[in-house]
Every structure is written in structure tokens, then in C-alpha cells.
Image 1 (tube, helix red, strand yellow):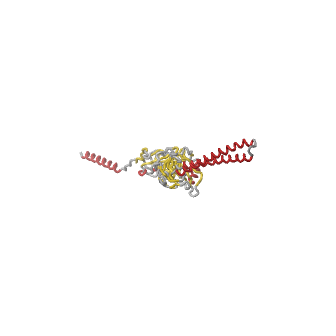
Image 2 (spheres, helix red, strand yellow):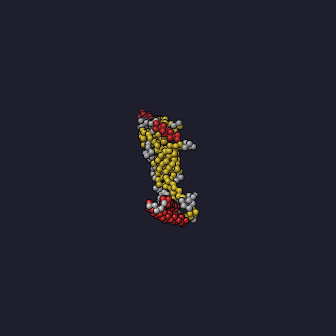
Image 3 (cartoon, helix red, strand yellow):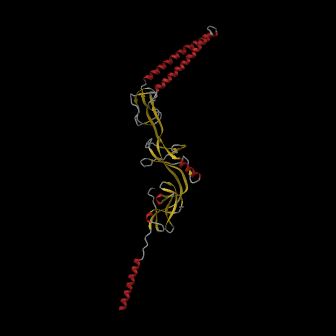
Length: 378
């Protein structure tokens, strides 16, 4: 009986000691879960963001071409006008009188021509039979020529007077948006001073003028020459516009030209893009920034910027996951930014698994559990 109790006690003590040993054994921490992306090679655009201002495609100053009192404004300020629409009416009375006088002068000249021409015709027949002297015929013929010239002069005076009379109706030289009238009814406007009456601007389509550093242009050219980048034509270049409030203009534009002259005071090259503007959201003088696609990189390796710890001097560090789910740090070389990603010129290859989310929970050598990362910006 005593032996049985002793054996039972020993067994119990053994179980207790085994349990304590298990409790004192070090626990392996669970693998951290991280969001990862698999690196792939792809064709990526090189986009440059440049500042500039909106500019009207066509601007026309409406000016007085006749002198007189402005009788009436015939448009709604701030409205759209068509080419040829009458905008202002200048008092036509003085110029109508000038036109009538010129017309009368023309009628008088024509009467003189008829008389002198008839006389010259008669003398032509008489001189043939020596009924009048050759000198008398020559005088009659010269008088007829002079009368013909007087008719032509009078006709030119009538045309001039007609033009001046027509200028009393001031018309729109182009179609577009007209602002406020610069003069009011009753004002004296002058042909001599070409009094400004209004301003018309064509807003659809509309230009965006911006500049680029000549240094950047040279760098881009070097990259083309070295085969690092591939050119895209102006017709294929994608142009997007970011407005002052941070929004992106809904319709992309097209690049029209890049100037060949560098401004010696700023070392900048001027570029121009064109955007459709049917709702007149873009207004002349408005500041904006353009996203200009100037080149593409073939077989580019890129990674989200949030996955990169910048080291300076064009390098950075990323955490990658090895085939046995271990974390490894890699030094990479960084190129251009494309959206929210960096182009990687060295240090990564297609197929590498890069940690994007959960970086604060891991360090090199740690074991991790990987899940695909879903980019919320897409």
C-alpha cells in the first residue's frame, strides 16, 4: 500500500515538473501579416508637371473706325457674339452727309464726262474733213480724258464715304465672349485715336502657355540619345491640366508646339497646349499646372513610393520577402517619379516581392505572412 502511494506521488510530481517545463519554454511569435506587391516590368510614361497660365485662342479689340457720338450699345455685356454682329451704333448723320456730297460730286463728274466726250467725238469727225483745227480736236480729246479721270476720282470719293458711313455700325471682328463695354452711349468716339469700345476673346478651344527649363530639355535629350527613354510625338503626347483648386480638368488636351528659342533672362523654353473649353471653365489669366507626357520607358521596373525609405543621393531601401517568407532589405537606385511610384534603375528585378504595407512591424530576418496589397489610390 505504501509503495502504491509513493509511486502515485512520483508520477504526479513528474507531470507537474513537465507542465512547468512547457510553460517556461520560449514561445515563437506569430508571423506578422504584410501587404506585398510583385514587381513587374512594363512600359511607363515619363510625365513632367509644369506651371503656366490660360490664354485665349483669339483676342480682338473692338475700336472705333468712325468719329461721332455713340448712340447705342447693341449687345449684352458678358455674352457670346458672332462674327459680323453689330455691337455699337455711332451717329451716322455727318458721314451720311459726306456720302451724299460725294455722290453728288460723282454725278457732276459724269455729266462733265458726257459733255466733253461728245465734243471730242464731234471734233474727231470734223478734223478729218479739216472743218476744225487739229489743235481744237486735241484740246477736246484731252478734256474728255480729264473728265474721265474726274469721274474715277469722284467714284473713289463715294467708296470712301460709303466705307466711313459703314463704320458707324461697329461689328464683331471675331466670334467669342465679349466683356463690358468700354464706353457708354453719348460718348464721343474718334477714328483718329481708334477709341477702344470692347474686347472679344475666343474661349473654346483655349490655350495653356507654360515654360520648361532649358536644362531639363537638355537632360531629356541626353536620355533619348543614350536610349534610356523613347520619344513620343507631339500628336501622341498626353496633356492633363491641374487647376488652382487641386482638381483635374475633365478633358485632356494636346501639345501644339515647343518653341525653339530660350528666353535669355529666365533660361526657359515656351510650350503651348490646347484644351476644349465648351463650358468656359478655363478663363484667360487663370493659373494651372500641366502634366505633360514627354517620353516612355520600356521594360521599366517601378515600385510604390510608400514602399521606399529614401537614403539620399538617389538611393533608397525596400523590404522584400524571400521564397522562405523571410524579410530582406535591398538598396535600390531611384529614377523618375511616375504618379505615386518610383522608377527603379537598379536593385530590383521582375518577380521580386516588395513589402508595401506593414513595414513598421517587420525587420530584416523576420518571418512574415504575405497578402496582396490593394492600392486605395487606384
